[in-house]
Length: 634
Image 1 (tube, rainbow, N blue to C red):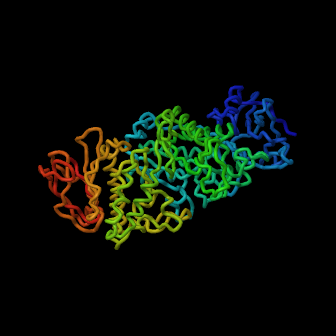
Image 2 (image 1 turned 180 degrees about the horizontal axis):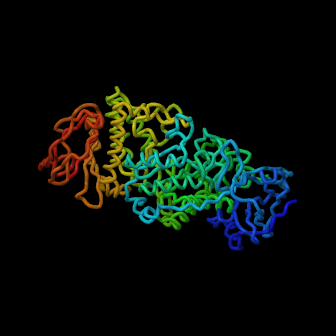
Image 3 (image 1 turned 90 degrees about the horizontal axis):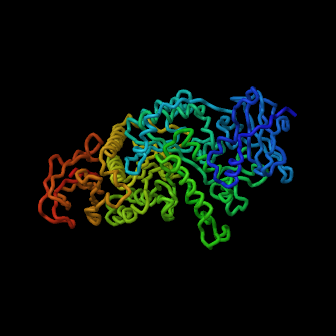
């Protein structure tokens, strides 16, 4: 057997915290770490495998021979195996060969803490470190302002593999190429943040990254870890925040992954009623196990600390919270109080958010949570789960369903488009038009719009304008900004050639200007999570299908009035109530000719008259364009 030197990065405190589930920097200890011992450079390895009889490091350096480099088990019953192998370093390809006490089962596993992985379909881990020199100091100093809940938050959701491809070579763009193309595009379009669908290593392209095997490694599909840091750095240097999709809800059964890691149910719950997700054919983490909780929270902290992430969008929270999620009667077991809530998950999510905001008070966590579970985005100290924001799935479903209707029928469904305001301030909501809405036969967003081509684009401009003036932050999946015709296909580039056609080019310009308006109009974001920031003028003019409301910021002089005409009929001399004797001026119109509209605008200032209307003391008469949204300053 080749010599392995006894060595450890763990202190007694580390072991105590790990066992108690409160060690949140495990990546500093576990995995492979290049170091020098007794003047000799090599690599220290450590892995958690409490059911193992033996653990060997195997790789190219020992011809993948089990037993050549066998790790030592710690004496403290932590289940940690460790040791220093001289003379191997950066770029070494390796796995752990594990022989279990459980029936002498043998497994070969990638390192759960590896910083780099082989390019799929290869599955080994790679010893790696980098000395990347960050240049985003200015952003990191001021990002508290950009990531605050009273700041504009317009997010561009991106799947890196299909946003744009290198057509001549039929390949992905690299992290370096994306640092030019994507960053320049996002900046030009005036988005405030980018959200990346999972970039942690995953083996299977059709999973879109939601079945992870390398939790601590950016996917090698687009380059090296330091090249991903370069992409993040370039975003920050251009005042663009980055949110990462993060998947603590489930993981795949791939042989090299976390499943049945040491011949036992180590990371997954041993009870299939809690440990197996039937819809996704994947394993569910055991949130009742302290060491697993430490693993997951450490992973979240890792992306904030090592990669300067500005936030995490936590995937599939609803599936985590409920024991009966997607299960029939008899397929789940109630909690100790007889309820359906997963108490271990609730406590895990609270601890996760407490630690993230304690360590990084200038970031956001965002829950993809589709149920009425209360207080998801309320602080832990007041009984909430502690997320910064929550996706407003109800708004998304109701709005898309409403806009898909022919305008002639919309007057019968006015409540569908106004209902979201009945609960809009119960959480800190983000309004998502995400990737899930443009796949599996749902059609593209543009493809759902009714009418001829002109009406489809007018409807889409109206939908986007309604989204930007509705309380809450905003998220749009790539391609929606220029009217992608086809459903999203993860294997192909977006249809950028559509921008050769005026309707698509005009729509892109419209979204660019919407983002600009949003960022420069405090009333549209300063009180986006408070009822103080919104006031109805009229929500019940169902005969005309018109909505009118006021958006408010900290300074009442910045208030704006928004009016939506949800039919193709031009409405002249349309009267709305206003609270003050004031003059209003049109500042934005979705029907402007430069956006592809018909150019029906309110060209002059309009003075309010002492003519009570809509419960207000004064009123104005305005012109409403067809399928148009108009915004007035007051």
